[in-house]
Image 1 (cartoon, rainbow, N blue to C red):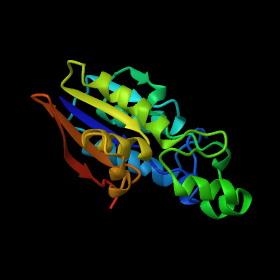
Image 2: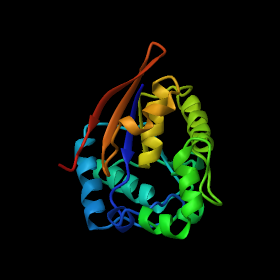
Image 3: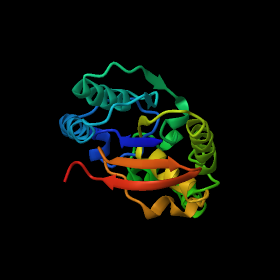
Length: 199
């Protein structure tokens, strides 16, 4: 099985360095270009199944990829691959958060796995839903699966592959438009390639 993960194209919120997960925003011009570059890179692949998060930025990216493929594949929307919910930190950069929520920011930074932003979710909670999603994906009998999602989800999938070691979350980059090929063969899951389509 070939599982292609694509991080959605850039948004204005990415440009501003905002923490945002549940905010529902569209791609900007650069993001649209990145989606088209991902589509060109993936053009030889015929997808049997496509999954997106609930957010417009992933749906928009996936539709561009599939349109360029001239494929009519249903988009399976799965909330488990939504980006992490940053609660009160949503729509703010780290300078704003440190100023508005100094204690909460300090607590979160001191134990990022178990603590959560006010009204948001902890990384452990976030990882738990991604773990369940991946368990279900591996049960499928498909050749090529496309999953268009978010940077935090992609890095969490890397942790899943590395036996659930969450410390690896910060050891990988995940840029807008990146394409990661993960293979599942003979009960072995591994990262085959990570491609920056926008260089």
